[in-house]
Image (tube, rainbow, N blue to C red; front, side):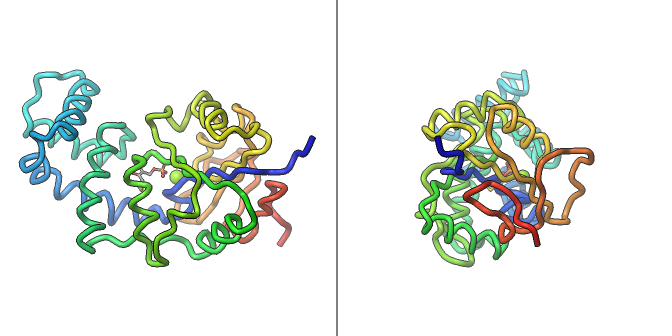
Length: 237
Ligand SMILES: CSCCC(=O)C(=O)COP(=O)(O)O
Ligand SMILES: [Mg+2]
């Protein structure tokens, strides 16, 4: 039985894109436009469904739209990974990518490695707290062009929270590759712990933007260039 890696699952924020791009560009873009977006599109079934889901999550089904918008903006400030908020952010970012306000910037080493790994036959997947729509938009509108064709699939928190092992078990099931054949890359030690508990291989990306939780036992690197995709290990540099 081969023990080689066959599929690679990547996180976005802090892994292929900077934390600053998400925190300082994407989040404020959605936060600023949320009131106008809800006023203009809050009556549509898709947006109404997400607003109602946010009310349910808040435990306040009677919140009016203005109070709900304020609550959602607070959740953005708190970096809450709430699924309805993430769905609404994705819908707002769609306008921004389409009208040219937004262009995703990715770490160059990540773009190079993803292209190489795809050409080498690895199956590539994304697992992010951002909605699947937001993920497709981001990879579809990068400064390096449309990178969506590199990926075999996208997973978000509708599969499960990123800090819980069953989410990774569900992803492995969906991919159809045993856990030891799947490599997960993330800047979050909590996510890597959950993935490892589900049997995946793990590498921590330490981009220097944030301090990774100390005392972890995951292999770690500051660049995709140092990752041996076949073995799932960090190459000696
Ligand atoms: C799809 S880009 C926006 C990512 C996002 O909304 C977020 O909260 C970052 O989460 P990640 O799981 O990619 O660290
Ligand atoms: Mg991350």
